[in-house]
Image 1 (tube, rainbow, N blue to C red):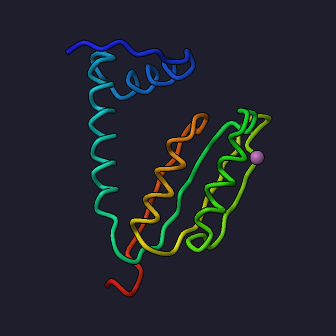
Image 2: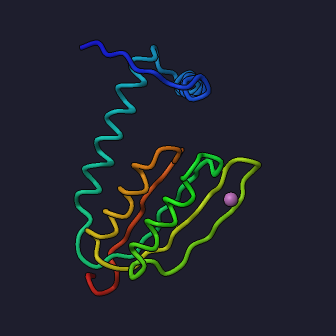
Length: 135
Ligand code: NI
């Protein structure tokens, strides 16, 4: 199946740079691989259950209208889950934030998905491990 996708130039440049470094024979092959890893990450997220500790790491452009507020709103909505957070101003526009979580796995996943869905979030990654109670 053929699909058409609009992407910002810098995103495509970066992607092309990576697939060249990794030795992909074509952009399509790189895109197929990226989609597979997106799907497997999503399926892995489906297995996050029970009491967990974890982190969500996010990079985003704080100059995007409403984004900092939206991120703040999400964190206030999940206050009982959040133990701590670290904010690093990367450069003029970009921020890096790490949110430390402890609580129900399903809730942690929900929070991570809410953050990932925000427009202007450039990168986000959830990592969790079972807390001692589950081992
Ligand atoms: Ni910042």
